Length: 80
Image (cartoon, rainbow, N blue to C red; front, top):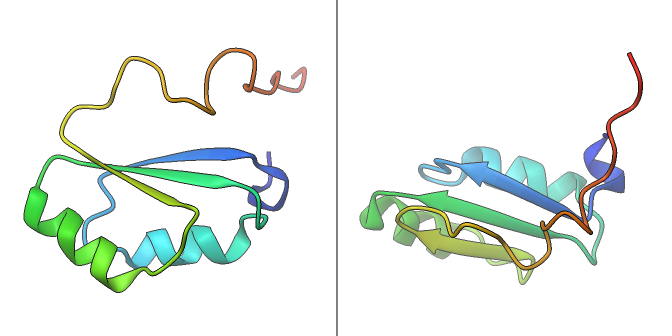
């Protein structure tokens, strides 16, 4: 699925936020990006660098289910 049509994206290990910024540039204005980072200092760097209300930073292990990324929100994969 192209990012331009995504509703919810999960980024594992956003580091300093370089890729995070690139993802957000392509996401629709009503989408969310959950950035999951184990290193608290890196996550702080990302949140300082990226000033975007669509960013949902998560420190530590991801929750079992993210609010907008549950089965009801997940698109079906196109047939191969």
